[in-house]
Length: 161
Image (cartoon, rainbow, N blue to C red; front, side, top):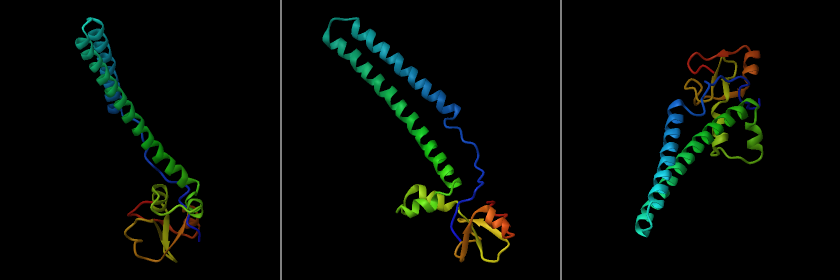
């Protein structure tokens, strides 16, 4: 049998950004804006070069704070997007196609999809997730949920595929 990920996998809905991360990012963005304004006021309020450099330093620090916040925000979104991409690829059965074009087991997408395969011991009554302890170290066949159910198998009560 061909190895296919399950057609219906339930995953809890994940928010891209939690309320706490939105508040933190907004707060850090506001800190950056305030520091830019303070730096401008310090630099523009004097004609002495040494005093102006203090304002420029404050403004530069503000840009670092704001830029770091933006990078952290985008990185969190990218991680969430990659997780969603793996789930979508698993649903449409891309694992075999990725392996066919030379993707290795160390590739994070292939590893995630392989871990979500549904397997069963031949002539068994239960099917399991590939990572289930009850299926580990046994000769198993891999199939979709629909194929397992058509063969008369029911989901394992331990791993809950």
